[in-house]
Image 1 (cartoon, rainbow over the protein chains, first blue to last red):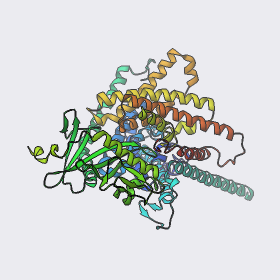
Image 2: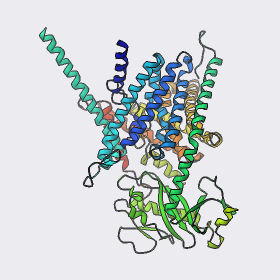
Image 3: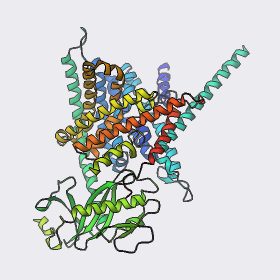
Length: 215
Length: 217
Length: 192
């Protein structure tokens, strides 16, 4: 029971409390570059999920065989292999999306979130926990990608996943799908996240204070 | 990469061995996925190119790939790079025109254009943007605006293509620029003009056309 | 020559690596607190970019035509070992410079601008000279963005800013405004 609990918690923490984008501010480069539409965000999220789960699984299973001195190089080789596999798969199945994401699929290798999870978690925990943690982190990353991509596509193009929502009367905010829109939207989302966290802290402090008073 | 200098550290031989082993396994995995996806990817790319050539050369049913050499055009299906043109043929095997690649700076980044060119009439038959990062909503009308693309169907290329203010098109070598995206429109015209300068001397006159019969031999 | 100038200006201003392609954001958001260090990190990154351009040209010309599927893995291995090698060389040759660069050198390995440069140069089909100019432009653009950001942040430190917006949120919004300003450079080469 306790074990069940802990793996659920470790999944949830990646989604919210330790969200790789909003809290740890990792993986910024693919985050901003590909989120001009919701579909691109989804594909990038899935590719990252595949790479992170695969690498975490391998690293956790092989952790006793990996010599400490060359571990970083080995992690990079493992990650690059998974990224190449993802790259070719997307190129074969979704050529149009691949054209838009372009160089940013190979750049998943340089996403510090993935290497960071190997070093900080997968190499120190069992296979099961490593996979759960990877799933949580990827879900958190995907959540951030979709939030950003959704807002940018909605405002910048008036559509979501390519479906027109506002009709012809809507004048799109073109700036949102251009690079400045990415920076500013992410900045505002971070602000929102900080605000929610601050509210929660204040609420908890208030609850604690009331409890003390009641005693 | 790291230097094993401690006593209990594993020897460099073991480190090198584990790296080499990892490299070997990863190489196998990569080659496997490459071989598995290669047919689909090649087919997709060929299909995309066919679509583009058909768009710029109406009425074409067969395509041949030529490479420009000092002795003239040579068919070479493996050719790559700047010295490549595609010849488009109608069902009777007569040459309709050439599809030519040209690229140059646009408003934002490099624009790559494919245009169809009829050497006998010295006219552009169609234009298709292969790659561009022009501003969404404005510059991207160079391929999203059907009216602008239609400018290039049957357009005189000599002395050169000129972009004029929308609605003032009067000569056969003029195109209507897009309102709000004049620079992108002019860039497309300039890129085609530059392509024409590079290629006009090298494309054989109608009597010297490489016919379809040659290809069948 | 025109073409080379366009490549340089494009990487420096119009398609600035940081502000238009979002490459090298980790150091841009993380290390841009001080003007002095930002400038140094920019120079070190430019240096690595140039070396990477040379290496990736070599790989692209002699090795990868036979094995295109090894592109990504060979790029990343070459970059990681280049940075490590440069680190060792600088440590031996100039301890003073090594001290000045400090933690920045290893940080450069994880800078996606480096891998991005190799991949973009390959996709654009650049030759040796073009690749070199592209690397110089990208490095100069990165340095420019870093220095601008650091200058603004040094000023912002003296201002009264609500606690909630301080940190990354504010830096991102500043970056957005800078990026908007850089959009003004678009069209620099096509009017005329």
